[in-house]
Image 1 (tube, one colour):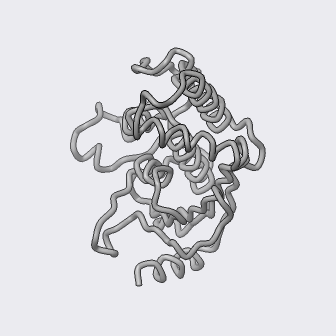
Image 2: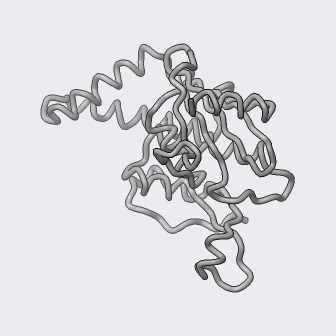
Length: 223
């Protein structure tokens, strides 16, 4: 049985997140640094870790975490723990979802293309609120293409309304009606729940791609 994670500072209606299984990685550097007890070779990243990284429970965090989880599951063999930090991601957009994916996988963004593990390819075209991610594990020469159809959650029109509320609140919190604040938080809870609990069919699609296709795309982005 999954051990319940220690509760964080979040609203109690989000208590279900502590029951979510973490992503387990092998991690050589943690062993070398003496971070773990004798005989322990793995580390974990939970959705609560993502919330702490973001500073709040949110849809970008949920989407990024779930995408990373599904990508790791697709790239790993049965019972295998992949090495934390040994992935590469190419994102269709420079935004918080891809930041969370990179955080969850243990990736860094460097100016040196040969050391960078997190790339943005703005040439990837997609409909509104559809995001594409190419994630690879070079050691195994395996890669996947992940499509995140965020608009399927409540539709673009309703998301546009929420976005207006968010912008207004950031500009002047007092200008936002209490009813709009409640609507925003209630809808956010529903969307986060639907993402994390796989309640929306077709929301996240993962398909394998030839590693040569990934490297070709990567070299194009580097150039």
